[in-house]
Picture (cartoon, helix red, strand yellow):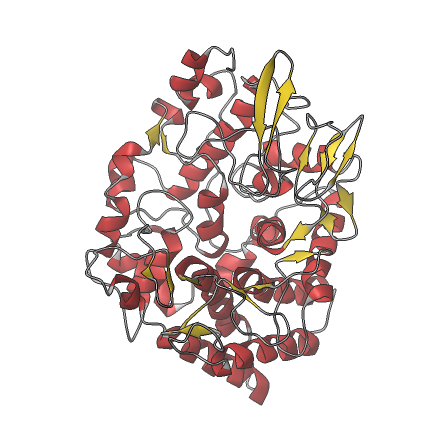
Length: 475
């Protein structure tokens, strides 16, 4: 049994943030201002870009879930890759023609990939796609689910491409045409076809819809926005009410620390990588008096404050080394730590204990902090600088997925990674869905890059308005 003062955890993150100055939210503009980053950050961005550029299968546009471990493709990683190619154009890391042709190859694959209810021999069904696909054939990997959220990330990348490639040549016209067809084909109500009100997280052939829905506060926010914005097969008018109905269970903090909370940092990142929530509010946020961007800023500070307080006594946690989210881990082990026995995990969601889905085994992921760059650059940039120095963490494609300074055990059958007796465990792989937030949020911070184009997407605008958002750029 862990001998900790659990009262501090149960009081919520408002206690943990109390000792950390929480500055006022920065002013909002929509003129794509240029914001500076330290010189070292460009190296992080370029290396992260090269993960997508080097590992993609150029015959079909599929991106591996992870590298260098041999891997299937993650359709969500493809969704992050499509804006990454455009960033490469803008930064001079690739040509427009190269990125355009790779984007067109990708969209052609997803438009033409076989769809159907069969358990094998297809890439998707009802306009959606399986979570993982075979890198070569593009067909369903084993028995993974038809994923509403991973398809949403893919769709967000596709819709970004529909706005970025705006020239009159035949290739860019085809990108725009395919993007609209791919999105319009998706039947969002298929994930409600058993009579449920909200959108299911997934479906299995022969097994039906997954019981869990995209409601509450988690990474599924933009699932509901795209469902509401569909021009052909949209979700119902009350879909956003289903999403926000569980919010009373997610509020944490008081006053300037009050926020809708979720322990891992992904929920505040994934949707906001693609959707600019600054200055727009739904009914819940109008009542709360702030927007989801500010909510994520507070969540970022809470994640850092928890690590600074370090109630479980893990090694190296500090104001310059923090960041809890879903990531790789050393594996499922119960091992002695100090005078206690602690549980460690393999790939798992992690976050402050005491918040929804909180779990802390000493494993940090660079994506958690760096994916929050636009929300709180003043506390994120020092983390990026410090993590670059951590032994074995920063390499060919930027940051490996995770590290655990406390895991210094000589054990067999690690799930992934390696252990150094001085600095602890470091993951082997780079993971596509964790690379994306690092690169794309840096681009958003610099000049609103992704947001600039997605603000133009009619479906996103319509989805937000149907969800009740008003104000800001929606006006």
